[in-house]
Amino acid sequence: MPRLSVWMVRAALLHLGTGFTVGGLLLFNKGEPFDTGVWALLQVHVDLLIFGWIMQLAMGVAYWILPRFAQPPKYGRTWLAALAFGLINAGTLISAGGQWAGSSGWTLVGRAAILLAGLCFAVYIFPRVKPMEFVTPPGR
Amino acid sequence: MPPLARYHIKTGLVYFAAALLLGVLLAAQPVFALPPQIAALRPVFLHLLIVGWVTQLIMGVVYWMFPKESKERPRGSPRLGWAVFLLLNGGLALRVIGEPLLIFQPGPAAGAALAVSAVLQTAAGWGFIANTWARIKER
Image (cartoon, rainbow over all chains, first blue to last red; front, side):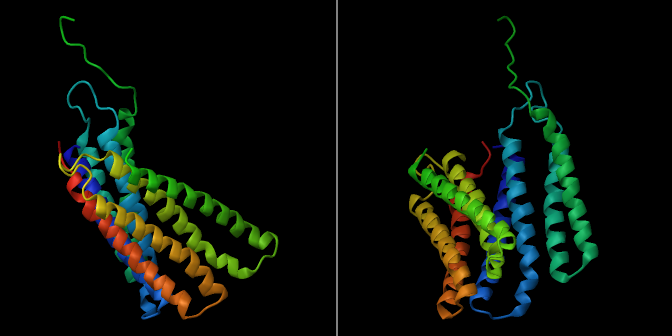
C-alpha cells in the first residue's frame, strides 16, 4: 500500500471512530436524555462519517488499487492526490466545527474545501481509470 | 474469503434489503395515510443503509483484502474481529427494535435499548480500528 493510501485510510479510520463516538452520544441521549445541547452534534456526526470516513476511504483505496502507469512516475501527479488528502481532512474538520458552532461562514469554507478535494482527486485519478499497462523488457 | 468477511457481507445484504423495504414504507406513509409516527423511522432507514450495509460491507472487505499484519496474525485478532461483528450487529438490531418502541410505546425499556445500542456500536467502531490499524502499512 503506498504511503498516501496509508495516510488516507488511517485518517478515515480516525474519522470513523470519532463519528461513531459522536453518533453514540446522540443515540444514548435519545434513549436516556442527559443534555439537549448534544443535538448540535448531529451534523458533525454526518460530516465525519460521510466525508471523513466513507469518501476518504474510497479515495485511499482507489489510490492504492487502480492501475498505475508503466513509465515513471508510476502514480502520476501525486501532488494532486496529496492536496486532496489535505483538503478533505481540513474541510471535514472545518465544516463539522462550523456546524457545531453554528457558523454558516465556516461551514461554507469547509464544504468548499471538500469540493476542491473531490475535484483534485477526480482530476488526479481520471487517467488511472484505464486498462493495465505492461512493459515488455527490451530484447523480447 | 474468510468466514468473518462472509458473515459481515451477508449480514450487510440483509440490512440492505431491510433498509430498502423501510424506504418504501417511508415513501408510502403520506400516500396511504399510514400512521405519521412512521416518518420518525427515517434515522433507522439511514443507519440500516450506512452502518448495516455500507460500513459493514467495508468491514468485511477490509478484513478479507487488506495487507496481512504478519505471518502469525494475518488478519489481526480473530477474536476481536468476531467481537466487532457481534457488537455492531447487536447494537444495530437493538436500535431497529428500540427506535420504533420509543415512538409507539415510549418507556424505560426503549430508552435503555437505545443507550445500550449506542455503547455497543461505538465499541464496534473502535474495535474495528484497533484490529485494522496495524494492517495499514507500506509495502
